[in-house]
Length: 116
Length: 112
Image (cartoon, rainbow over all chains, first blue to last red):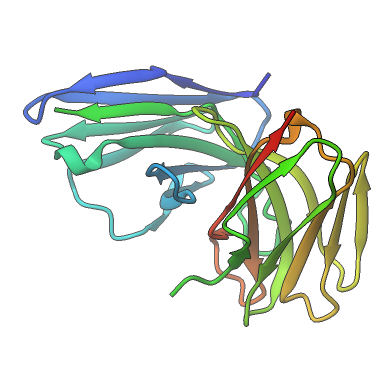
């Protein structure tokens, strides 16, 4: 069982909707990540939070808005998405930030998003 | 530009066969991981290698990190249907970038 929990597992939304993806970890990890994965492709980094501060934003459109309320929680707020944003959104955590660390990420099971 | 190239991209073999997956780059990595991902699930960490030339074994899986820390291989002995999945190598660049770069992936199917 993964120790990173993502909800919801599946989400269908229209292009005018506002929704949120949620992620929680209780391993005491200090870095959390959002990745986007399209079918048959490797995960692509979207955002990195290190010690609850946004440290990396990989030029993600503003219709995706991350939030880290505390060290255990990570949200991804979605607004005015496009059909091409349909993908598996993966949350991950690591003990520390990647730089200087081993790069070991613990992933959640993902949230499958479909934008109609 | 893809930092980590995996080969082969697809592999379909019979149960009991051996296989090797390669992960190559022109960049140096401070550490390299291998993950396995099943459909609809997140990647699961299999192993981390940090020292050039390091070899790690996990039951029937053998992982090797190249001497120059630019490449890695995964060898599976006597493959089982349960080994089916997407295998991803991933590395943290030695430049200190706060990102884990994933390889292009190898989709393995083991036929019973």
